[in-house]
Image (cartoon, rainbow, N blue to C red; front, side, top):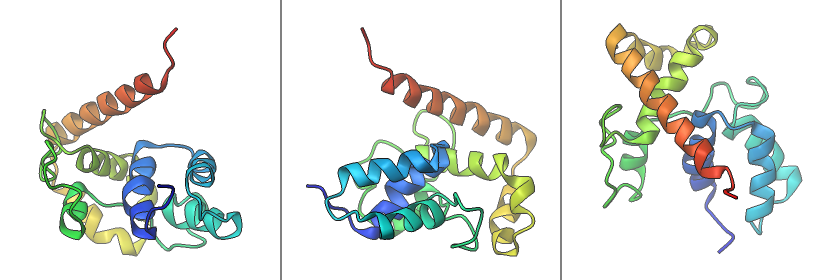
Length: 154
C-alpha cells in the first residue's frame, strides 16, 4: 500500500524499467509518486545511480541487471507465474530473461570496458546469431506491447 522493500524496487520494478529502456528520470518521478516513503534526497541517487545506471557508473560500478532466474532464486515472485525464467524466447519466455539478454546485446560494446561484466558477457558470447536475433525480436515485441498498453484509447 505505497511501500516496497528496497530490493523489490531495485531488482523487480527498477530492473524491469532498466531492461525495458524506460528513461531514468521517468522512473524517478514514478517512484516519488507511488511510494509513501520516497524522499527525493535518497530516492533520486538510488534510482538514477543504482537502479537505472543513469549516471554512467558514478554510484554503482556496474548496472544491476539480472534475468528471471535471479528473481526466481531470490524471491517467491515466480511461484505460479505462467512464464519460465529459464526461457528467453517463445510463448513461455520470462520477460525479465528476454529483456536481460537484449539489454546485454544492446549495450555489449560499452559493457566490455567494465571488468565486472566479464562473466555476463562471456555467457552472452555463447549465444549464436540465430538465438540473438530471436531474443531481439522477442524483446522488441514485448517492448512494443508495453508501449501499446500505455497508450490511452479514445
